[in-house]
Amino acid sequence: MENIPAFIGFAFALATFFTVWLFYRAAHQSRRTLGVLLGWLLVQSALGLSGFYATPAALPPRLLLAVLPPVLMGVGLVLSQAGRAYLDGLRLETLTVLHTVRVPVELVLLGLYLHHVVPQLMTFEGRNWDIFSGLSAPVMYYLVFRRKLLGTKALLMWNIVCLGLVLNILVNALLSVPGPLQRFAFAQPNLGVLHFPFVWLPSCVVPLVIVSHVAAIRQLVRLAH
Image (cartoon, rainbow, N blue to C red; front, side):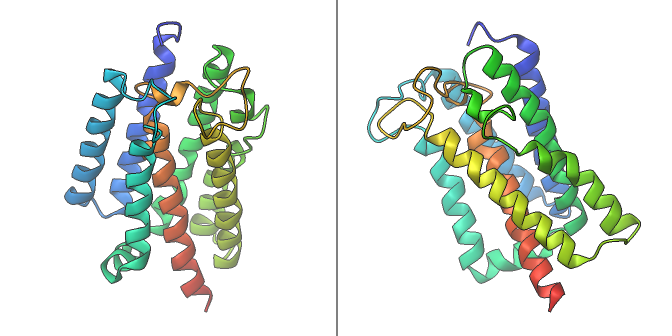
């Protein structure tokens, strides 16, 4: 990734740590939560820097080591009683603010596209409309929690829509990575996420965004009843 300007990687690293910090705040400054997240970032940093993921033709796809553990962790949170209690205890206000990180992430993806390491479909010029979530997050926070002009049903619908947006780009991004599962973007595939620090996107940032939505939806459904 020598052709990528350092400021793009630095900006993404800042966005990642901002995401982790906000989730840590949502978890009531849980040291265990912070330790798990920072440890996971360290593991993914080592794998990304070693070039482990830069062999997309390997079977099974090595990127699964970045994606599968967070998926299993998320499923465990939803299915276990302790996990559901953890999700229900997260601060709803902070979970809403967390989605502002999707704006800098979208700008980083645009920069990576312009440097030919991710496809256009991963940007807001293509199939990625996730920037709506980032731009609307502070608006929803203000209208729901500060001015109280909108209620729980509006916030619930917003979370459902934004969850759909992130799942949409996640599927498109994974199917754009070179390898046996690739279905899109053969001319300019998704190479960026195979390298440090951008491997943090599928391994940490996106999972935290999804967990934040799932936790918020659980809490809002209960409040709506």
